[in-house]
Image (cartoon, rainbow, N blue to C red; front, side, top):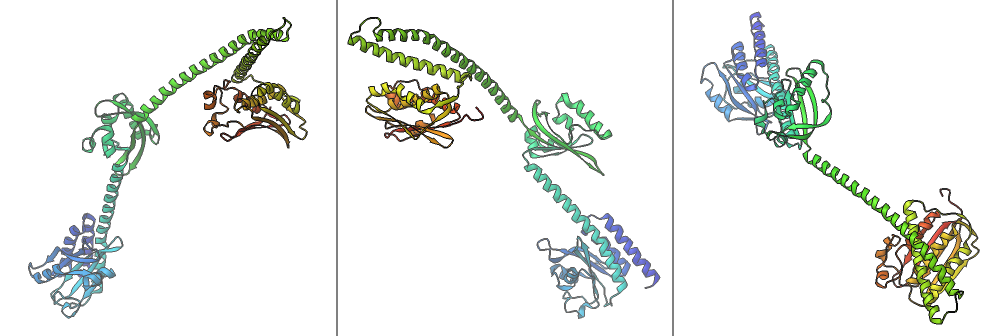
Length: 554
């Protein structure tokens, strides 16, 4: 290659490089590069093809043409504009498919070239992002054999133009990413706000518009401190930003805090704020923040706090009333107990005849008085027991106890009441029962309560059974009757203090609803448990299981 021609081609490559560095678009770069190539090679015409926007596997002609003599290649231009070049079809399609420059020495003799040209045709692919993004096409007036040196230079020109494509792709990707991020932020439920290191707002999403009452157009470009920061915090804000920019010291950055913000309508409201900073080498620091309006949450918290305080005061008052009630019950019970004891003592004197003979009518009346005194005495003892339980001073005195004696004592205590109703009271024990660690008086009381319960809820002439057996390390005691049974809906409340079932209320059965609650307390105080089985109309069975020896935790 002659020296001067080599210099011309090197100059062409430099010119193509300069154009590629300055251009932002392949169409903008294509025209001056085609002009430079034609000027350096003497080729009279050049042309740019790009992928079709509807199908990028097909290349089409553009209006980027160079003609040394205007109108000389008018027929070729018209034919090119009507053509479409799929990958592999025609010289344009083959160059796009292979990614290599192609040279047709005589288009008139090449069956693949159908656009009616008689000279040489050169196709130069432009690669960007790993794919062919454009094809430059050049034409001569006369046939010309391929020039390898020229093709090499042309390939370098294509590489330089590819840099334009790379920048276009990067710019489009950046634009797409920016728009995608903007759409994500606009769909975010939290407000997003950004400001540059000069303090100006640079980003403002849809949620921020709702939170602060300013549109994006109104907010962008405004000073952030004057827009969303309450006046009392603005000086501190300026000092904190300045300190961070000069020393890197940070307090709010990279933390989530609760603070007040400023609304466009001129009032403060509570927010939750998360701030972070990003440094760009070109533009400097950007401060980003997610802002969540917590006004409703704060109102809810305040309401809950007030409700809690009110509830705590109510609970404290109820506790005071409960203590007063317990003290009152204890005092009244003691006050009743003393005169009642005197009444019972004098009643015993009268009944025994020590005060003189009694007529049958007087004996019957004294019997009624005695039974009601016993009823009052039992009620007072139950109320005192409940008061001790509530005060935490109900203690059992466990000792070695003959279980059969306790069972017999419980039956003896209830037998008179059972006889008055015509009931049969049966005591049965399976084998020797031996002894247990128990409070005999309280265990007898628990069993008596269950037996009385059977007497009260069994029609006259019924059967009440008290049985016991040893079951390993435990003793199992059952109280069974064939009475009215218990409604399934009432069982969960059966051992609740002062609970009286529908039958007891309807039939005016004696009792205050304390017997079963006390029984359960006594059984659990022995480390045991109580269960109930009942079928309405077919009786009830209470089962007590207590350990034979004192549990370690008692």
